[in-house]
Length: 347
Image 1: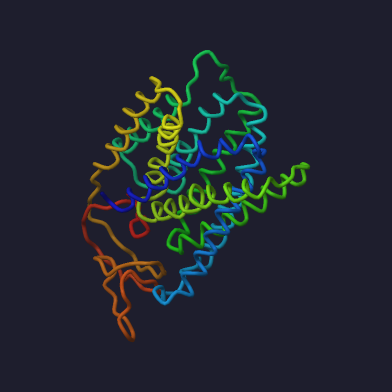
Image 2: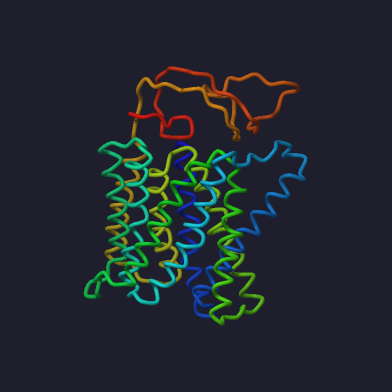
């Protein structure tokens, strides 16, 4: 399996598993406060990991940080995905039926793909489009509740806005995905956590007991922090639309955990499993190859000396993977590839 696909599926699995666990905490913590605690646990945990990596003699390579305009892209991603998106969702949830909200949240993957394809010109074909439709249809099947109202209301508009924010976040994060994934995810978690905690306190809410704080922080670190690190790596290797498609299978993993916790097996889960597996298969079996041009490029990210990294080193040899500023000279060749950080050429 391509490592980008493994990152995307692992990210979805961690986030999906965290959802039913987080729902257990909702009974004792308000949604806005819980969002703040989850994001804060994510950010603090990842920043501690980042500091430990820098102090560890086993990780001597420097952290790859955003450069130039990449800081603007990252700031936009944090504002949209970490602040505006969660706030819009919380307002939407207070005005919308749970079934409607669950259905509308599937729009994030759709918006992510549409923005990637038609705004940022990421490559796609009929097979990828069909795979995306199958995965999203599986999410709709999981969320569908016959007989409950699904009309678009003011609350639904807030949820749609939240999905649009996260879709833009995904595409903007892709433009900074060569930077250290732990750093990017940690910054997002800290800012999003601070914003949501501030909102909760302004609404008159109070911090929960210490055991709940620890539980929320742990769930946030794994389900939001580590999951986001893996998603950034998936963006680096797959592009926005494909990474978003794999992440869209997260509700399936959450439903499986809910079954293990005592929920009943439903026809929705069976239909969703067939649709999502079909969609993932269409993506995994994709083969996109043609002669393409690599223009001159200078950037920094963790890499090994593969066909795209045949540069010399000054000084002693650095164990792979390693991180440093390096140059890609112009190159013309043909091989199967995804729209990763080295293949963002037009078609």
